[in-house]
Length: 482
Ligand code: NAD
Image (cartoon, rainbow, N blue to C red; front, side, top):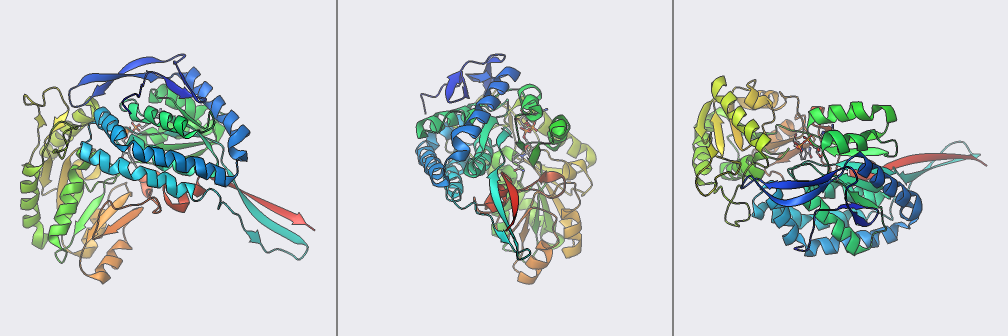
């Protein structure tokens, strides 16, 4: 996708200049320098995009038979699959993610679109028995125009998780990607264009959250906001959108526990726990940032974490040999370094990392060492708050009851990992975990068909699976007296 230009918005099937936005340099977090100019939309651009989405919804899209929508989505997915490398390069450039990770993640996205394409002609309702002379049935209808607001850590994955089910349900979309990483989302517009989607079904408008994002949320022409980001932003969004009583779904933060019992396959648990501590440079909602370790194996696990941290190759994101790139932007770098300071002040033991990497090769980039704290106490801030950096907190526990209490002892409830070879314990503990997804003897393994979302402050609703499709549909019950 070398031909991709990012200096236009994608609205109503056309590439247009912003009306009340402008061009902005997108910063390469590996150098701290701009690497491309991206169009940013303002309120008038959001208005245009919502109008285009509404016209497409009332016009061709919702009237199109499901199998025709499926054919378009499949064509899009097939084209997407041919552009994985180009998309991965753009995303790694924009958010600093190691190219090997971007390739792996983006390489799966076509399957998300295919899976939702396979559901477009199966949106059947049901009949409901009533009295003899009354016939009742339900119909499932698209929810309308969807405003999708996505974060900077996984822009294309967040888009796939929303656009797949929304388009399959017959909705139209205005996608507003995050300020720090808008380029890869604009590249999606070229693929929708090439696949032959009717104008206005998908519109893409990068913009500032408090301006373009807030305008989309408040807009009376938008029926639902599908948001991924921070809990604090979700609270603002709820207030901004309250007057319109539109629908909301929220995928928010996490502080996932990795619980390792002494009867587990320790090598496998370590591979998963260390891998997930530093994946995406720690910038993913489901990463196991709290490592809960049974006391009898605690010293061994801490020692392994320290050794493995020293083997993580940190470097330029487009180098296929590196494991970890920089933090995606300056604010996140500052936040991570500040939490490392907090961990030290709280009295946790820093056993690996702890500093910014600013040597000759990586000068100017937002690089941080993979960092490990041991002897972390569950109520410390580093064990309670989402850091979103490569910082693992290792916490000792004795027995199942204490493990569950620590695991559930944060306001979050997105994900958890559990390592044990005792099948009874696996079920017993998993059943007590307050999280939307619990992995047993595996971690971060998900598919398009598996619902994903948070308990407690980690979100509202579910993405992926049939639950995601439901969240883009309204149910109409028709009751006919014969
Ligand atoms: P963020 O909340 O800062 O921004 C997310 C989006 O909201 C951006 O597009 C931003 O422009 C927009 N926004 C900001 N203010 C707004 C406003 N007032 N009105 C409307 N839109 C506004 O989040 P982030 O820093 O980009 O992403 C990191 C967060 O996302 C972390 O908390 C992470 O855990 C979470 N996340 C969750 C999941 C999940 O599936 N649960 C996945 C990825 C990321």
